[in-house]
Figure (cartoon, rainbow, N blue to C red):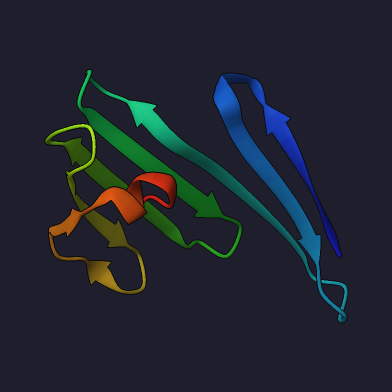
Length: 89
């Protein structure tokens, strides 16, 4: 069971608990604009997991993205198409 709360600067806070009563807090910010075409995603939680993603918009419907996750390390640069525009890579 859990709840979401939107913090200032569009940071999403997620509070969760499992059946054993362990609490978890996760903070997430998606589509943080660094420039007109360059965006960053951030996520961190109380289990010391984090991820950072970067996306460069080549055109209106094409972008390149990569990410780093504390568990899985670097992800490859992958091209995104129109389908990814509605569901970011």
